Image (cartoon, rainbow, N blue to C red; front, top):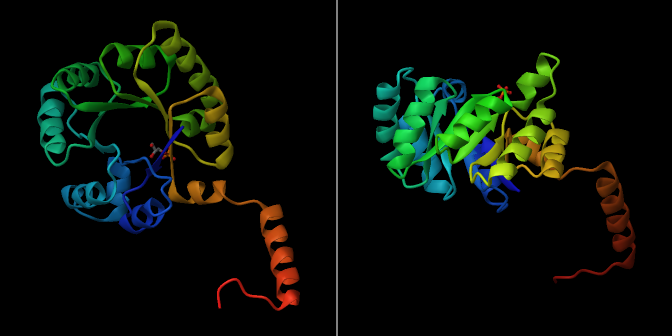
Length: 218
Ligand code: G3P
């Protein structure tokens, strides 16, 4: 399973990239607004740090506008994945950009039917928002299961990029289903490494080691 981080905060991207666990980055207009930074400037900085796919979202709502914006964003770096919303215009833009050899991430997916259309439109990634479905009392993970089944039925190469991840169990459940990618806030990635028994065990090991009076490096 690939891990993307869902942020436009350069410090977090730089810090987590050092672990070797970051396979890509996703951004959206809200994350750019939160960063308070210039969109293109942030994109360039992210692409200089991360070699995997970096999603950059268009803000036009008509297909032609999305295509023009998508071409501009894709020209910034080879690893840009242009993000378009799951609308009919977005699907049209997806097909055009994909035919041009550009990676497209179709976002704001909330149904299996939508995911099927994105795959047919040549999307490199489909982004189902699990947290936002859970928020309204629907099962985000059931959607991931259904998309996995449909994509496997037809050997679609579109990668399932689980988005709107809110906690570590979302990542684990997505991995159990066989989703291709999980994009998560930086803190969720950090929390995946944490376990109280790890902390307790490490403290005990260090306490016992100190009693020996030895050092590994002198
Ligand atoms: O990747 C999409 C993500 O940024 C949306 O997350 O928590 O705003 O639903 P959230």
